[in-house]
Image (spheres, rainbow, N blue to C red):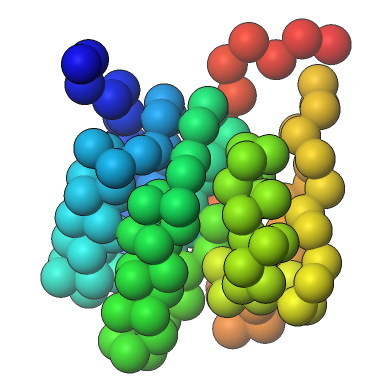
Length: 142
């Protein structure tokens, strides 16, 4: 059985990090997601934005890793937000009614689907003062 392909890129700015995940998040790669997000907290990061634009697949093990990280981030006094979830993860978030925990959406609100043009970024919580660097998109066709 082939290994899951997942790449993690991290860009820090003071106590804020942009984590860009690329590839598949499943039972085999979810521990890497969890470890990467926990590392942010150990390094003093308290605002974590996760760009999921290049993620091609995410199952409930990925959701579990994100929920665990969100809980740990909240305990540490920070916030974790997912941006541009793939359709499958958006459906899981909707079914589990936990998008409000990870996306900053009201309960029962499904994020907009991805199309050829990425959706506008989610609004930042009022306490954020450092602008989030725009995600790097590859293969953007106009």
